[in-house]
Image 1: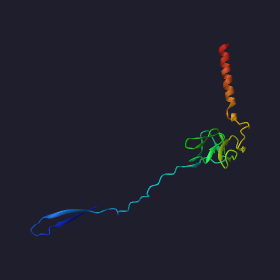
Image 2: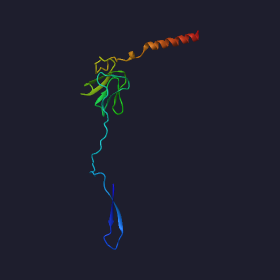
Image 3: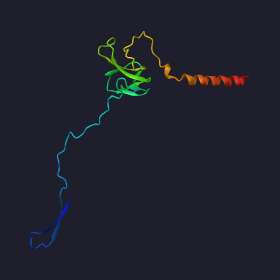
Image 4: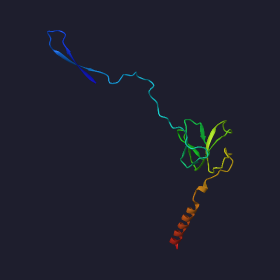
Length: 152
């Protein structure tokens, strides 16, 4: 905002007029602040809860450091993110045989499976039931039929 001022000369022998402009502030000046910054949140924490179904690649937990360690069927990324390797259900447990109060996250193939931690000598449960065996058998039979037809 500008205001124009017409100023006359003080001495009578000078009959010149001066035209001046004064500039006024349109905003009141506030003091500078040192604490006016904030970073956005990192979105850490659980993404899948206990007994929730996961598929391979699903992120279970984002964390800084290893508050939780990867258990059975769980992998860990370079930023300590825990993710599912096999489809199944999330299970959280502690294993005091390795270290006291160390918490683990595992993916169980059955929802009712709560037998964690497992003995290293126990047979592992594999997810072969997840493969569609009927489709594979039909494809094999078709391949054998083509092979026999070509050789007859």
